[in-house]
Length: 84
Image (cartoon, rainbow, N blue to C red; front, side, top):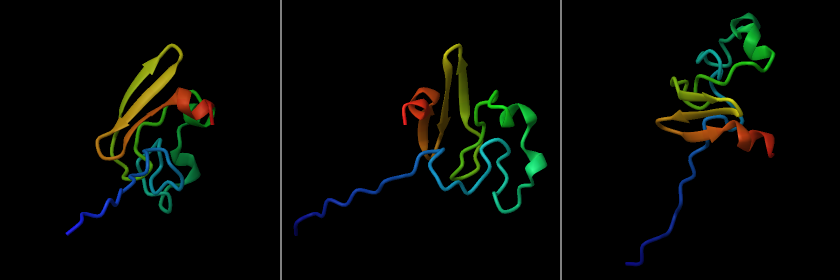
């Protein structure tokens, strides 16, 4: 038998569409607009929760941005978002 080379791609923690709020961890369908902190709306907060699974991410804030890592969906860096 020849093994098949099927590659499963796991969406990143901030890949669209989000199932969970990245600032609250609440399901998008259940999240109200006032649940998002004002600092996050102003772009002053990094995402704290994975948009795919709602788990709390490990976030490192640096002078030039931030890096966030979900244990299930990998890592994202703010520098990557600005180059899209």
